[in-house]
Length: 117
Image (cartoon, rainbow, N blue to C red; front, side, top):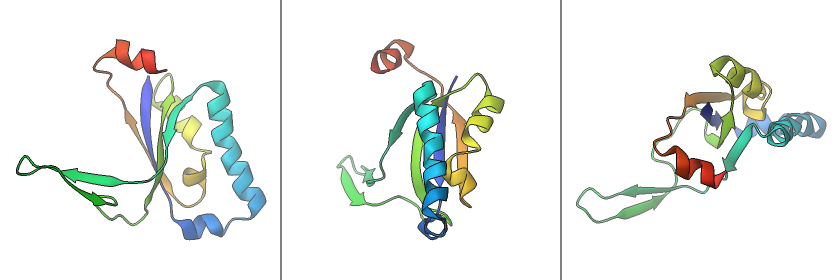
């Protein structure tokens, strides 16, 4: 099963960690990548699109403000939600006073998703 993981965390809390603490947390992402559990991750350059009158209009930045900013997101592979929680529990945002939302992904066209893997 694939899960979308939305990682939230503040830069202040991240910078409060020592370099060795940061490196240890980032190494957890490497473990997920090496196992093949971290399927994809993306950066945070955000463009919001609205087309209320049928004409696309864009703005830079997220649609909403939250207590903790979105720090990144990824797609992981896990047998079930319990395994997804276990895999994510040691990632940077989950450990550095942030939070990670885990959402199951429903594949609409499995063939095209598998081609991109």
